[in-house]
Length: 356
Image (cartoon, rainbow, N blue to C red):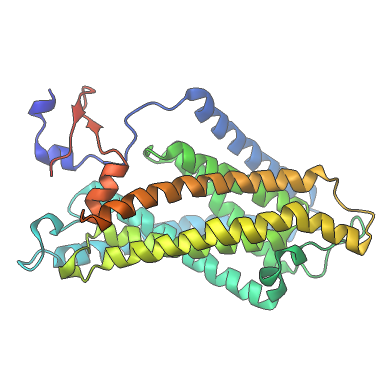
């Protein structure tokens, strides 16, 4: 059966789609945890309805805005992507790079990545605005921790920061639900789903405990570095590679490699995780506060952040392998395909290799 599959049919198959079943215990476990976190968030909104009724209104507004934004961004980006793709059909374009968004699979991936770019760029701008108002949080993440009498609403945690947190929670909960139940499963599904669950868990627990400043710093590190990653992926889908495209994909890949490594493997563990693990207790002792968290609480938060760090190391390893193959002369598209195992199956379960 594999020999009877035409090239046209194979090219419509998403090479990043998972071809093997995931461990059902892990898969269902991640989905269950995500649902429990969403339920916990809804209960939190109900629990604080008297003191902070605006949170529920922001949640409803953010949910509607997210649905509308997804529709607008994906449709507009698809029109733009197809326009650029059709321009790349002349004799000056290498044969393998002509009309790169001709297939529905490529179009779907391009518009999905455009939505991610819109989220990360918008959130990065908002995070920059908030951090410029409190620069000490970025310069010294340990300064994010402040101690207040029990039950007091900190004046420093302005409504804008709380609104930002609600919007982020809505986006990440939507992303997790989409990854688990709506989207095609990718080969890195378990890693991505784990990332989404950890992120929602960290956002929710920091919101409940009023530790929003440190969460803002963590989100700023991740969102800002993802902007370059999104641009690189979109350029790759348009196959803007090689000399005739001025090495656009290759330049973005190098830039992404640097920003990803610096922000997620240096700033994140050295400044943020260390601040959570050691800075909190140090400030608590220096300021002689009696209402500090028990010692295990910072350890718990640092453990969750370290879970994200492990995923960063995994993705950096894959980026390094792709980087090496680009250096030795392979096109970025081909190098990426090899590292993400492009073996596919036809409708009868037989292996089909993508034609070159």
